[in-house]
Image 1 (cartoon, rainbow, N blue to C red):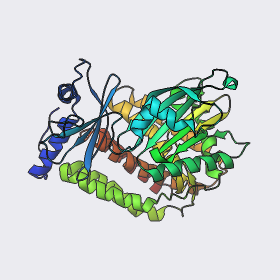
Image 2: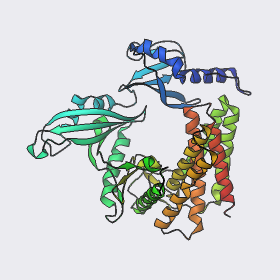
Image 3: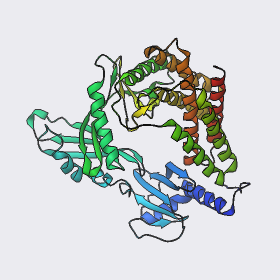
Image 4: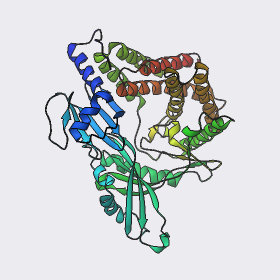
Length: 438
């Protein structure tokens, strides 16, 4: 990976960004990880996730085969912390999964014996748990880990069938408690006639910040998008109807997602990025300023129940009509238009990424992005708002918000990626379209 001095940056900021880039270079870090951890398998390492925010910190997730290692870039590049959490150049402290200093219950959740004991008294109906198997699903360092768990009990009525669960480990006791409580309320208040379903919560282990859900089957919406014969369109229509059903449910969450606060935070984060990359930082600040200015032109917001992280990967298709909505960790109170805008921005983001990677033609990218209109029309129809122009205006503004959010996330994962600026451009294009709706 090569670096160049950025005009307008201080020597300290330039040196810091170079350390970040070095820490994110898997080929450079691989031999250092092998030496520090004593693995030496010869298998290459990859950077599978990262979160970098200037003046805040940088956390990187490395992966090699089935091994996961969290790396935290320290303010001072020298010094070690001993064999359990060694420090390697350029000052990256290593924590091998499931050791995460911010997830107090993760080590217990990842250990079959400890987890079996923790679940024994909170999962009724299986007698003594005689076998517990744990597998890895997803991991966001310092935030959340998701594990696949298979249990077998001693009661004859279980018929020897395994109980398949998903166990989520959270960084805060309060977060786990809110997710568990809201999931129960969501299932209790869902319209039985709606095609919408949720993964049932089977247990909450507060002392370990764990939430246990039933593992549900189905086909992910992501796997259907891009198919021919109208399959993508039909799947999007089903997802749109399920989302509209969610938005009709009672607001069971006490968590408020204040958009004004988030837009102000965009400016703060963009300004920090400008310290290490003036051009990209200025572009992010400019879009944030435009979002703040145009917020006054958007029709008055309504408040309802929202998913909070609405994208195709959160929809699981079952049978001919049913849809399971996954990962309600960001559920809260906000304008439902934010969910629709985020979904639409995700579709276009994928089209832009494919175009930049030359995995598709410009026409192919536009064709995939056009699926957003299918979803939008189906949502407005299911929500009974097809003839009202105001929801489209709100959704367009929230789509632009989502592009800013995604651009910041892109910079956090890959500071030199051209996708960051491309997403900012998408945000401006969306606001241009909003202005044309006046």
